[in-house]
Structures are given as structure tokens and as C-alpha cells.
Length: 380
Image 1 (cartoon, helix red, strand yellow):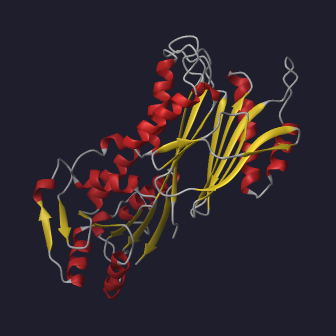
Image 2 (cartoon, rainbow, N blue to C red; image 1 turned 90 degrees about the horizontal axis):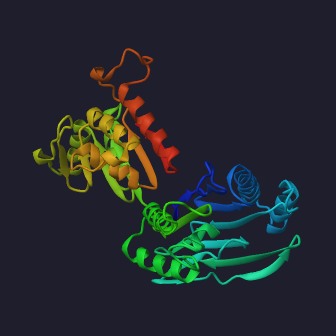
Image 3 (cartoon, rainbow, N blue to C red; image 1 turned 90 degrees about the vertical axis):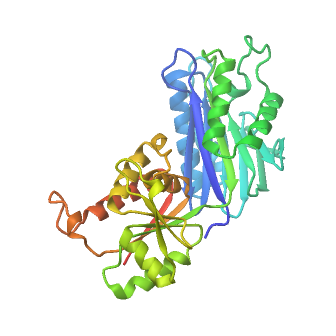
């Protein structure tokens, strides 16, 4: 079980008049940790995008393979094509690795310094400089804690508004002050990245003079969700499923009226239906002591599946919206799926061995996995 979860979000805007952004971000998760590579290609447009893409791909794959910074920089320098005008193969980069124990490693080459937020203060990361393959890089190893944030940016963020709204551009100290204020209000990396890129675009007057990218990193405790769906094939396994559900960390959810009754029976608790939660097309939820959410089965699951693909629709108090929000907010999701077959849930268009419930569960698990969540399914 991971001790910390690293939430990462990134957004970019391309230089005005260019279809492609010359900045590139690659994010890879491995063993509970995350590696983030941000690269700013020389110039703008297609060529810059190619340079940045090559850099992030090379650096990301080499670091995940355990390569040293010297080998990464040397490989990038010998791989990138040479600009005929400036006679340089040039692409800046910032690489950040954070594992689930809070160990962090930062490498910066010609990108603006990263912003490190801890205890309400925003500071530079304390780096050492060294020569690597004829280039000077900044390098740091440090420890992060739950509640900390890191922001990686390309120089389009720092220079926002230069010569226009802001004579000298936004500037590192002013960006740091803005980051300090917004991290006091918001913790979600996706929202923080959105706020920063929106302000940057406003400083450019909606006509960015350079490619601009922000990567927001939030370090927090992981969120676990366990969902029991349907009764086990063998009634003898009822207790085993209930015990596994109640012993699970984090949020506990039951989908299915029969499954809810099983949990109530095995724990000696009562199940109460909440008719106020009923919405058009979605059955009401229920409550059982020890559970965070109890919903109806296949109808609610199908509605929740639709909302997972359109998160902006998961705003209501109905069971499907609440279930979708719980799943979207989780980092680790385990489904405890009962294999008892309800003949009413059979779909003639599916193989006879697959129930409609199982198909819906497979689709939900796939969507969650594609969004970067760790998903596990246990059958009963």
C-alpha cells in the first residue's frame, strides 16, 4: 500500500498562429511513483514540437530504465537534429521523479526553476550545478510530504505579458506569489494547472507570444475505494466478500439491493432506503452502517458509466452521480464482483458467458485504468 500519492496535471497553450505547441510533457507511473518530463523545443511550431517530443520520449524511457543523468543528457545531445540556422540541437528539459515514500529527484536544464510549495511557502528547490556532457544542469534530491506541491513551467509562463500587459513579463517571483495564493484555496492538480494557464493566457491577451506549459504536482495521501457489486455465486462466500469489503481502507461502496441486504444481514445492521435521493431514471440509494454509499445495481452502474465519460454530468445527488464522483476521486479502486447471474441482465448480443453486469464492470474498469488509476477486480 503506497504511503503517498502523486497527482499530476499539465496544460499548454501554443504560440499565437501555431497549430502545434513546441512544449511537450510526458508523465509515466511505475511502482507507485511518477516520472514527469517537461521539454521546450527550440523555436515554435512543428520543429519545436518534434524536438520537445524526442527529448521527453528519450529522457522518460531512459530514466524509467534506471539510466544516469549523464547518459540521458549525452543521448539527447547526440539524437536531436541540428538547427541549420543556429547550428544547435537544442531542447530544454525538466525531469521530476517522486516515489510513494516521498523521495524526489529533480533535474533542470535551461528551463525556469521549479516552484516548491511546502508549509504555505513557495521556494526554489535547493539544487547543485554540475557539468554533464558539456551542459550545465541543476540537480537535487529532496523529500516531499503530503500537502506539498511542485510546479514545473516552460519559459512561456515566466515571460507572459512581456512588452504588453506586463512590461517585464510575469516573472518568477510574481508567479511564485500567485502559486502561494492559489494553493491556499485549491489542492487538486488539475484545477491548479487550469488556473495558472488561464492567467498566463490573459496576460498574453489571448495571443500568446510563446508556447507556455505548466505541470502541477500535488503530493497527498492516497484515496482507496472498494466496491462490492452483486452477490457471490456461492452463498457460502457471502461472509468472505463482506469481510473483505469492511476490512478495506478508504471508501466502501455497495452496488445492488441484494448485495446491500447481504452486508446488512452479515453485520447485523439495518438497511434503509433514502427516497429523497431518487432521480429521473436512477433508483434511490440506501444506507447501511459501516458503508459510505449503497446504490441499486445494473441501472445505477450503467448511468455511472456514462457519467465517467462525461464527468461534468456527475454533479447530482443521485446514486449514479455520487458513485461516479467517488470513482473519479479515487487513486486505487478494487471491485468485488459477485458471479451470481441474474437472468434479467442477459444481453443476447453478448457471448453467453458474459453477463451485462460483467460487461459494464469491464467498461468502468477500463475507463478508470485509462485515466491513470490502479484498478483491481476480485471475483466471488
